Amino acid sequence: MKGHEDVRIGTMVPNGKPEYLAQIVGHGFESFEFNWWQHVGDTDLKKLAEDTRRVLDDAGTGAVVSCVGVYGNPLVDKQTAKDWARLIDACKLFGCDVVVGFTGRIVDKPIPDSMKTFAKVFGPLAKRAADKGVRLAFENCDMGGTWQTGDWNIAHAPTAWEMIFDAIPSRNVGLEWEPCHQMGSLIDPLPQLRKWVHKVFHLHGKDATILWDVVREYGIRSGKTFCHHRTPGFGDTNWTDIISILRMGKFKGAIDIEGWHDPVYRGDLEMTGQVRGLKYLKRCRGGDFVENPT
View 1 (cartoon, rainbow, N blue to C red):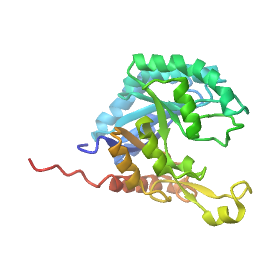
View 2 (view 1 turned 90 degrees about the vertical axis):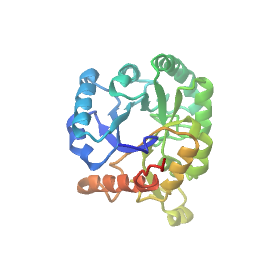
View 3 (view 1 turned 180 degrees about the vertical axis):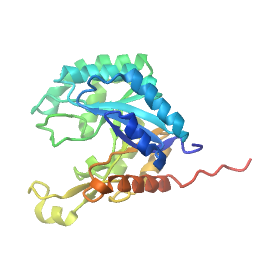
View 4 (view 1 turned 180 degrees about the horizontal axis):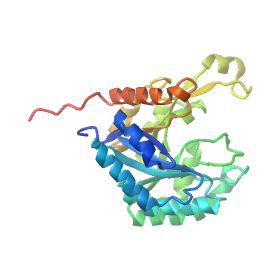
């Protein structure tokens, strides 16, 4: 790969399976997020990194691992917190410097009630990461939570981000951002990204379609679906604008498609949708890289 290394376009490898990576790397993905749900388990991270490097080297496409992550509740689950530490220690083995996931949350308490525990858990993790040249990025997914109650994550609202960065004012602590979750809160994602781009370390490639007719008739608390999560290229967001804001903000990293959510391009059409999203995002990035004359 030559050119466009500042904003790579990739996808996810759930549970860090190199055999899955080997099947999809040839589609043109340039980066891969390796992630686990709640716990990394008995995964031998050193061996996984070696197997991953072998697959990527054999493919010869120049693709990289963009980040590694675990999505659980490290504020109440000690094993999830330990797995954050494990991934911080193993991050450089994969050739990346970002660990991603949820902040966690004190279950069913207002967000401010989680901040003391958040600082206690992530203060040492942030220092551990900084000492190793690693950054931490919290996903902005609400996981069905609100300001008052929830199970998994406090990092889903800008007010909470301010509290997070006040609690741990470290340059290596930031966000894993995507427009989808903001749109599900009826937030305009583009002005938000312009404001927070300096804290965005990684992006999930996931968009949304807002059913405004449902919102206007029923609001957002009627139990009726008013927002569909979409693969980029099928939703409402202009990703040309997103990538322009990223580049103007000096972002360097990856947009990795978060699949398995689109209501249409799923099941047998999952990879069809992801590859369409990959090609769409590459076009939004400017198309093929063309060298300037010398």
